Length: 208
Image (cartoon, rainbow, N blue to C red; front, side):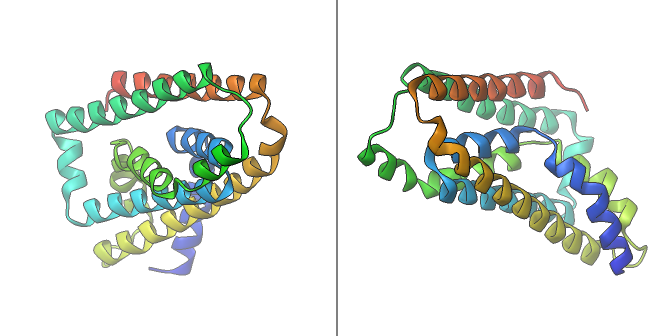
């Protein structure tokens, strides 16, 4: 795997990584509700989800998923239900939004495991991620290093995703103190909830 291939892969994938999607919405929601550290944990979870798809691809399971309509639809349905669950839960929270007290803020910031899990599951339950490993990554592989090349590019993609979403979490957490009013909380959580729910519906209706 040459550095030129890696550099070309990074340049190609960067716009895709930063493009708003389910991962983007989850980090936004987590960082605004629970703060910077939780946003970072969600970002780490997303990176782990990318590594999961790399592992699945190395084992050849990504190709099986892409070729099996039944299996693809099952994974897609699970991912859609999970996004819908997050969206509905966020919409419900929007109705109860109020200025956080000190004790509430501390309790929210300690939900690191939950934030990590949300990030990981959002990425790992998106079967569209398999498309990256089946159609995009092979274009940057040498003919003699398919397995090692997939591992390298999966690690590069995970690092790229981690760097972007951590940076984004820092930005969101920086403006968080200015968005603690009841109206702002309702508006943000309502918009995020609608976005997550809409993405769940779109994923459920999408075809390969």
